[in-house]
Amino acid sequence: MTDVCLILEGTYPFRVGGVTTWVDTLVKGLPDLSFSIAHLYYGEQPTRHVVGLPPNVKALSLVSLNEMGVDVLMSDLVGKLPEARLYHALSTGFAGLLGTEMKNRMGKPFILTEHGIYWHEVSLGADELECGFKVVKTDGGELQFGRTWETWYQAFQDFAKSAYTAADTITTVCSHNKTLQQSLGAAGSKIEVIPNGVRIPDNGVTVKAKERRDGHKVIALVGRVTAIKDVKTFIRACALVQERLPEAEFLVVGPMDHDPAYVAECKELTRELGLRSLRFTGELDMCDLYPTVDLTVLTSISEAQPYAVLESFAYGIPVVVTDVGGCPELVNGGSAAESHAGIVCPVGDARSIADAIIELSTDELLYERSARGGLARARSYYSTDRVIASYGRIYSQLLKRQE
Image: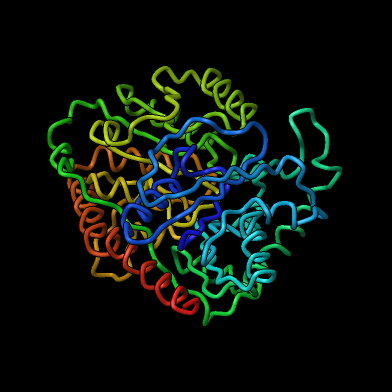
């Protein structure tokens, strides 16, 4: 039996992304606690680790959702979870459903953490969860288990309501998420906002702003190539930027296996717009990438507190983001006295996004002020040590109830 079982959907340790980074930081930061991992997946069973498991991760169980339906017998899935003193689910989807079951059936303490808000993202058009489960259609075009979008949307709302009720503690990464949680019935007294943390690298690149004024700017979108990231708007903005900054280079950096059809559409749009210098790189080592990037862009239609923005801050890179979730708070700061770390634009507005990219790329003073503002914010508010200490405290409080 481990101290903590983390219930995850399609992330750690098999898939690159913000949740994987978060989990890896957490388990390595609490070496005196033992962890087990319940990794929920849909589709093909994952095999390749993208991060190594530290010694305090004692068990890894793969839980298939391939037979998952709204009316599934939960006892079959519950029996596949590792035995632990408390359970910690990182979403209100199927992970939250299993955490709720462990609380209700076994009386185990249950922590719920939400980075993205699943039920809200589904309402915005997200059609695939991180575990690979398609909300509406299968690859063959048939309805998932014969269920309509409306049925699944209601199911994910129900999952969330149950998890909010059952959880001993609810955590999330930004105040915007807390408001969404409370709108669906989560008790405010249970919710604790714990921002994500990021480590400041030794090779911060604020000085790079002065070194590369030849017009060759490297502008990157970092994220999985899916509709919720609205990569098409980024592509359209890049085409507009190219007209003003013909030497600029554009990158789309992130997994391309979540929605192959959408990836194909994005590549076709790139060809149609004549974008000569936009590359889809797939997953890269981010420590190697960020020192080469001048500006990062997020065009998402839904975000919570994206790691790509925090990582950009840590490397002294200004950002252009859409006005979603916790992004405005990240970029603009919490007070008028704080320097902005980039520019916030309306969702889906390629022209505004292009204008922001051009402004940051051509205004040296604005660029340097934004770079330093983001770096200062990362140092002041987004510490990994603070995240680890917060969850260490929560775990300790709940584990003492089991003694």
